[in-house]
Image (cartoon, rainbow, N blue to C red; front, side, top):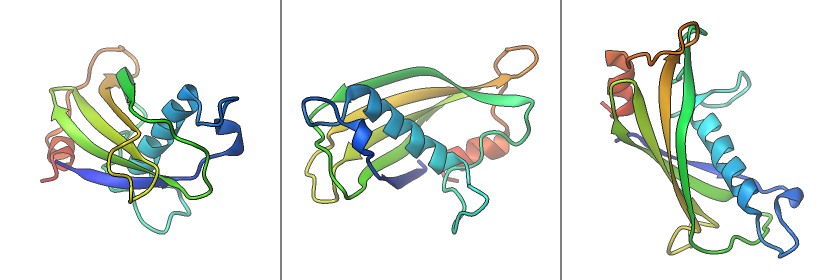
Amino acid sequence: MLSTTVPIHLRWGDQDAYGHINNVAVLRLLEEARSRAFWTAPDAAEPSVFPPLQPDQQVWALVADFSLKYRQQLPYQHEPVLVKMNIGKVGGASFVIDYALFASEDDAAPRVTAASTLVLVDRDTGRPHRLSPELRQKLLGQ
């Protein structure tokens, strides 16, 4: 399956009164990593690893489900955290992204694990839109 690692810098405001990264901020970190993995910024040095999800504005990629497990606290740090992502199950109109968030490459275990299901939806009808054979192959890393 297709996989990538995205470094994400923490922001000072991501921590809470307990001195660790807030649970909602963790979800936003994963969202940012997912966005960087699928969408290439115009000034990016390299293209995204994952295939673009929106070849046109007629089909949207919507988050249908998100589950998250906090395994260890994540204190604020100046070095970027690492969000490792891989494409899990690929369905007819949806696919799963698995996440593992590490404080550094030296972390023996992830601080957070998560999974999100994205569904392709027709903008006008709101109905699921089947994955094209090309997108399916890219998601499967073929």
